[in-house]
Image (cartoon, rainbow, N blue to C red; front, side):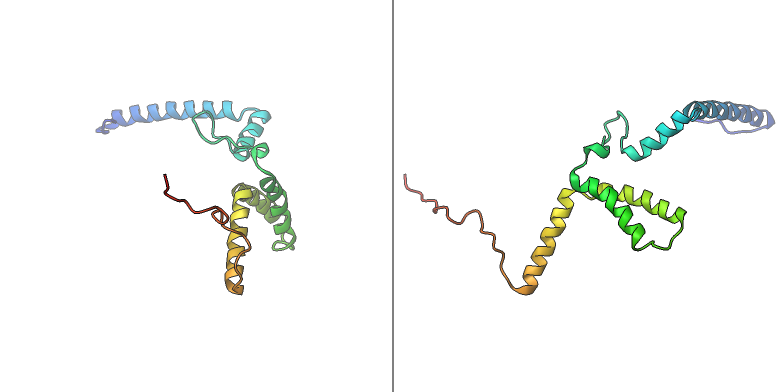
Length: 146
């Protein structure tokens, strides 16, 4: 708990303490971003999806399924060729970065789920029943004879 500042001497002591804290934090940041390889590693850690050894998720581009890998390429390309066709370099770069992050949520399970929902909606609108047979058809009824 910090002591309240009651006079000018307390204020000077607190200013000196805050300068020391600032110097320590600057030193830590200079070590972190001191070399180009450290900067590259920091930027790479933003896009790799790893959260460190504290139990967070560890996913990289090689841990994804085929649909997710395909969406990482097709989503930015499609957006830049259609919606942002006449945009500048900066906008296209930002769209690419954002869509790379968004493609993390596109995987085989989500695409399959959306396809199944669309198929069921279409079959409900047309009035056709699905050709799929339930698993219990063809199985004889359970009898309680001993």
